[in-house]
Length: 390
Image (cartoon, helix red, strand yellow):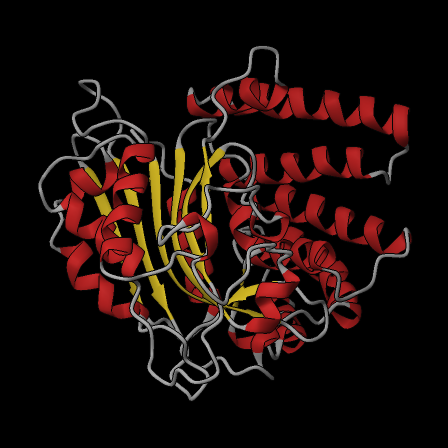
């Protein structure tokens, strides 16, 4: 499992590995992200995952953020340990100033629609079991993004700490994928104005080279060796990221819910989340962040249990509540709620229930169009088809 050498417990669930390498194809490209994939692909899947067996999904210069989301969502719901190797370039969207992973078609003016919002990692990984997820990163940032992330280190030179740079500081909040996810890697600083060459993902190539030995060391050891190897080749790492994920916390309701889901007790998990939602609503108000958090957990639990109609209904309720409290229609939390409601709505088998929820979704879509062009038209077309079904 993540953080251990390969060769897990007998009978343990296979690991899942997602290799994601993405960078723009235009003049704004800072890193040749896909160049690392042959190195990683040469590593046995079990070593990449740190498990006896593993399934590997590779995404090389993907074009659409929804395609990345679909693969990430599938990986996040896999029962065993999950390791994500992510290489690419960070850009800010001009409206909300949130970091995105630039994809092949991304330009500075189209970030919001063509790049992968970084907070989607947090959204998809939040129901992962504590200690079961590792994120290994080799990211590059332009000057604007570097400053927006609040990284205090100077990008100009290695500085007084030597070629490896300073030790790891706090993870930039905008890049935090959630407390239960271990994070290792680096954010490379902006290139100098005189440099016109596209950089290589030196840190991740060092990781791949080390793993080709056939041994998966603990994450901290792998991370440190990769930094040393990259530094020996003249690479200044920039902002070093190193944080262990939390393990199971006794008494934490999220841990109890995760264990219930893993053992197939979906009704128990949902009931526990509902009790915490009720308690939060009484203590803080039904539209408080505390209560809405537990409603979102219930929506995810309904999805995992295969109840698309209930999941859609809860997400619609969450979106409407957020709008009532004054949140903007393009706020990430509002868009996420409507997008997830839309996704679950497409999986409802009962035509009558789909028509009922589809009307509410269409009303919300008219206010929250989201990032996908034509989302409202899609709902209207599907509703029209549903009218002809019994």
